[in-house]
Length: 121
Length: 105
Image (cartoon, rainbow over all chains, first blue to last red; front, side):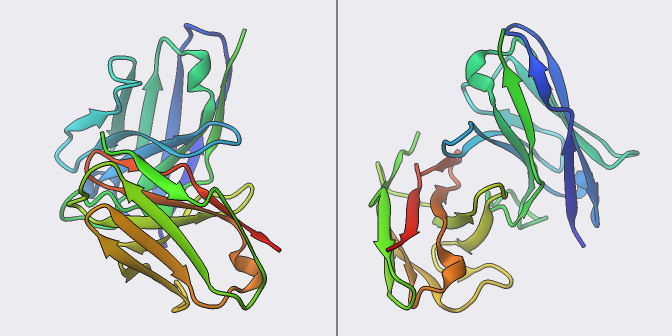
């Protein structure tokens, strides 16, 4: 059974950093396409980043240059390193897995429970 | 960036009624469309992908259709558990619609 469990959220001041983790089970994170999607409290969904099977990563314009996605195969865990955080980065961050292991379809049937990041002074 | 506009913002219906949710894209969507359901305090749940394919475990009362810039999610006969927020999504440089809240009338 596929499971995704996020951790690492919390309160951070503007300009600060935070690293989110997503522990996966039931599959290998390096064998598929993994993404982060965020949702500001009471608002809609925003795609943040994707890491491909081969290791290439892509980012939304709003976070490019500040966020970095990576993975640790030995721990079967996905990470999101967030630097230079802004108030507008406040959101629940979800880890997701693509429906396909062959190509990045962009469809997400697997979601974690989310972790809340609050950026405030 | 493809902007997805969902309508209506809020839809008030009764159990047993048919629900029709719309998603319009700012340009032609070549990669098809998905629909998600989200209940309070929960992660989104994939209902439909590739415009009309139901995800695993999704009841047959949910169906998707459309092409080009206009897409529709139809719930044939509403069950009490269907009242939630629904988002459309396209996968070419991924964007989501702003959501339609389906509430009990």
